[in-house]
Amino acid sequence: MAPTNCWNLRVTAEVNQGGRKYMEDVTSVQFERVKSGKIVVEYAAFAIFDGHGGKDAAHFARDNLLETIKLQKGFFSNNESTVKKSISEAFVITHHAMWNKLPEWPKTPLGHPSTAGTTASLVIIRGNRMYVANVGDSMVVMGSRDICEKPNQQPKSYVASGLTIDHKPELLKERKRIEKCGGCVMNKSGVNRVVWARPKLTHNGPIRRSTKLDKIPFLAVARSLGDLWSFNSELNEFVVSPVPDVYAYNLHPGKEQFVVLASDGLWNMVRPQECVSVVADIEDKRKNTGSISSPAHKLVQLALDRWAMRMMRADNTSVIVVIIERRKIEPSKGKGTYVESWTSAKSEMTGSDVEEFGSIATGEKETADKPMKVSLPTEGKPKEEEVEKPVLPPIEPLQDASISSSNGDVSDEVIVKTGEDKSGEKVEEPSSSGITESRVTRSQTLENTNSWGKRKSSTRTPTRDNKTRRVSLRCKIKKRPRSEGGAALVKSPEPRIRRLRAAKRSL
View 1 (tube, one colour):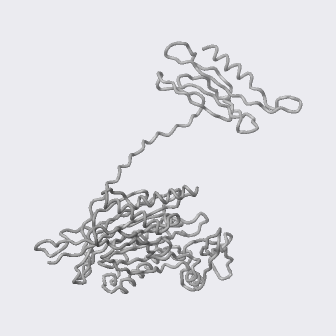
View 2 (cartoon, rainbow, N blue to C red; view 1 turned 30 degrees about the vertical axis):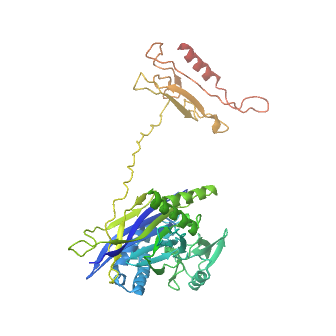
View 3 (spheres, helix red, strand yellow; view 1 turned 60 degrees about the vertical axis):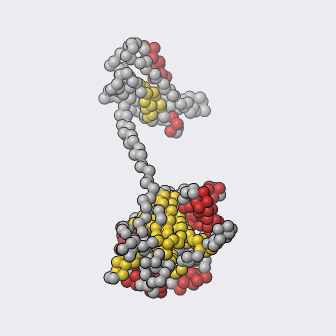
């Protein structure tokens, strides 16, 4: 049996929260073999979801989009247009399925239903075809160059090609569609945004034509999954469309190729050609010196450095890099198959995880139109074990100034701050700066108050010996404001000072 041309895929991925309070980016890497009747379809899928308004829509899309695509019968077809239609329908089905989850998602601070939404960029490799679908602005870029036929031939530079178009409200095509669906676009701080026409805060009850609305420039992308707030009930249309652009590309065996999927945390700081050059340099070093490094990690760090250099808070940044190589594999003797064993492999990354996959062979016979064959990926690098931080016991509040120590050898000083006199009478102070601060030791009981609020001396007479430490007393008395005649407005605490000094002398 003739050798089979296969695609060898090497994948690296990394996500970073940046300087944002929440992490709303999620990624997905999957290698699967699905049987539909007599047809067995093997494919590799990579996706990035950049959430906004919360992480709920992004997580829902990650968990359900590819599963919905597999349920479409047309996805297993060999017809290109049928596969593209199935992918597009799966996007819309996933979007509408979010209606059922909307009551479970957290409401906005003003009490409105969740405004969660997400971009979605998906790459599926089947045989010699690569399908790319997207909504939003998480761009997909391919770097490619011709393979050197001669050993001493100087390799050409990689050329960056955009595989998707960002869905921005300022695009004429998107603006017309938005206005046709009853929406509009407004500029806020130099950024064009889709307007959210929501009822005024004083409105109660159902929304009618006479309901007064606030027009708020809200979303900086024209298409997404989620964003259910954009539904126009009169036209039965979503102003923010869930319908994706779907493309089909041929993988050329005579070229070196790789694909970069990334959220706008990367593309806002790094241009596509520069991104391709970074990955190309890493690949050339690997081939020449054998050094191994993660292109995805390098790109994320480059983006974070650019954010810091501009003194801006870094956005969530997610990157997936797929290196595509052509390789010939000899079939197993006597079996006529290209893969001896199979297990589906999935990877879902959130946080600051980095996973590297080994070589994955996918391909088909050159003389027959059959689905690609995918071998098992090697184990990724094991994640570092998280060190559990010790939980400190809570500090019990002090009820009064009488503190006893369970350990007589160790005497810890405790600072007691109170705005009251120890008798329970509040001291009149011009501000909080007049708080009394006293420092006592746990090995001594100094003084207590009786039920009438009068002071009484300590029942224990302090003695000087090796077992008892000297009591350190300190009282900070703030200067009281005086009237014009010079008289103090607040009673002077001199008697208390004399008692404290007498206690120190007795020690």
